[in-house]
Every structure is written in C-alpha cells, then in structure tokens.
Length: 169
Image (cartoon, rainbow, N blue to C red):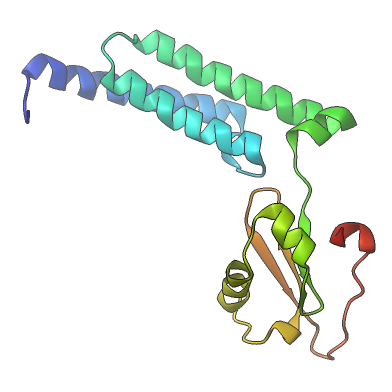
C-alpha cells in the first residue's frame, strides 16, 4: 500500500520531470492566454492540462510522448478558439459569456441573481471583500465571464452612475 517497487517510483520521478518540463515549454510557446481563465474555455484547458499531467505521471499505459501530444493539442485548441473569438463574432458568442450586473446603485437585481444562480449573501460577501460596508456605496457588482464578482464603488462625490438597461436584463 505504501510502496510497490523502485521501478514504479523511478518511472514517476523520471516521467514527471520530463512531462513537467515539456508542459512548461508548451505553455511558454502557447502564451499567457492558455492559463488566463478569462472564460469557461480557458478554465477547461487549465483543468485538462492538470488532468493530463496527472494521467501521464500515474498511468503506466500512457507514454510520455502521448502526454506531450495531448499538452500540445490542448494548447493548440485553446489558441484556435481564442484567435477565432477575436475575429469572428459567432465564435465569440459561443466561446465567451457576457458579464452580468447583479447589483446596480446599491440595489440587488433579483432576476439577474436568479438567472445566474448567485445568492444575495454571495454578493454581500464580495462587497465586504472589496472593503465596502454598505450596499448604498456600491455602484455595481458584476458577475464576470470567469465567474468572479467585481465590485465597483460609487465615486467620492456620491454621484450614482446610471447603468444601461441592456446590462441589467
């Protein structure tokens, strides 16, 4: 249970080092966007790369070159989707979500909260994390395409911003 044999341990160390080096090379060649987590596709690639590395390390039936090919394929697919989304509106709509305003001018938007399955307590926690104690001091809370919540405070003069109705939905 704790130790099988030296050969298996040495395989994990050798293949692990080589797979890690190749993963770093693939990531450097593919650019920062591969691990950016800007949208759901980016998150899927990040998780898939980690899963692939674990599979290469621990599964004797998967050769190192197969793992390297999988790293390269995932990076290439991520590049193709990101490149296409920047150039073709239909791909962008498919690949990327839209940010959604959950709170505007201190008021929760119940329909947006329900549609995005976010609770009022989660919005309040994001506001507190931004160092704001009163919802009245918040111009907006936005659910970003990566799933994070951005909090935008009111300006110091106390002016409220008028959020376009298309963002409120």
